[in-house]
Image (cartoon, rainbow, N blue to C red; front, side, top):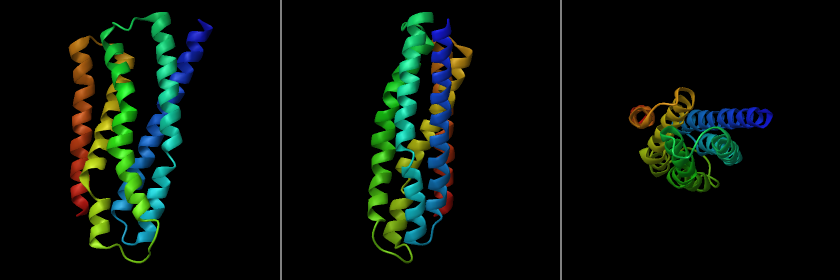
Length: 180
């Protein structure tokens, strides 16, 4: 049981790391979208970029400890575990391709230049796609936290993940539109 407790601790540490990284991206993104100069936007995108190792380490902590606890206590056929494992495996792909790549491209574009942001730069910073995806991923993470605690059946598991994902996407969409 000692190793299960250690795995649970590592799992929770991964969750804390994930939520910290998500919060940093959300807050720095909000500040970058409200920036008026290249220098300010660059600062906030650089700060958001510091979360890359946090996302990777949280992924491995959550995945490996989750697999160990599943092996010891549950089964991969358990509905909430099937959904959680699938999502945990998809998060780096969706986050990396849907958010990370887009934000890295904007960050690269801001590496040179100074002064006021051009309308093209502002439009690229405020492009809804990565921010809405990030908001949805925040919701998914909250849903995953809920299913880890409540361990529901198949239907409730899907609702518990889909509903906060949708809500996160809607809130992010409203927030991004409020800047323009």
